[in-house]
Image (cartoon, rainbow, N blue to C red; front, side, top):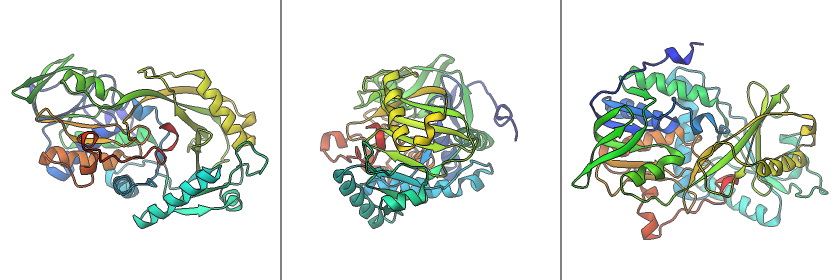
Length: 400
């Protein structure tokens, strides 16, 4: 496979663009790609303060699913999952998209009630969902511990068979290559330091590589979005937390599905290469650190070992943290802002990777037309004043 350095140009910024996207992670790259593909807008720059896809895109656990509770969430995540299902072919790049199934475990009667409710809600929204009893869970995932004597016994699980994982680096490289082929400038080492705003409208971004005029500016920088918005005089209802993950040494295939547990705060899959990939809950404090705290890993490993006693002999290879942006209702913020021409796509929390193509699709539409895509309309910033919240604290998995 071609080395990624040769998949796109590394241009200097031009003095002006029709659209400047801030953040060259999955969402920024997907937005640029769909601006060109769906709307014919190619005079676009995607700015990245570090290196392309070096933030959360390189620091996530690659789980893809669409089994969210509320209609609005199910619609946008299912749109994304359907895009995932054709994305390798569309981008002409092997994304290692593997629909191996996602189990969400229930450990209490309250878990069971909530899980069954979500299965029914998913089915009503056309999202595949099943309820498995403990024996069926064991049959689907033989290495899981379903003993009734466990501290948190497995009382059942939801299953989305179309869920799975993809290779995050490949996704970024494929989107970057296609965006570059359309003539979009991907500019690395270019930190946005401020915005030029006049008469309530954004005119340009100030960067570490000089002023860049812009017809429209689109924020797509996950945990740092609130910092950028603050530079434009907008206070977003977001909190940034470290979200830790870890990988094990390479193993022979032992786990051919994704297992998630909200109650004990762990989720695990086995990557194509062989390592176990595990995530946990967010560190409770606000931070922009990318390391996280040891006590979270300790609790995560305790949960993993109870669910999978087989893992007791496995060594942890490395740990890291991403910076997740969490909104009050655990749902994203997509759309316009009080500054004319400035758009925001943030608040995805732990859902950012799975939403990559869907978020890019609806965000590009919103930017191109100056008004929200129908799937993005419920996620507007003004819902925090109207009270029309979309509370996904339960279905957003372990992080909220």
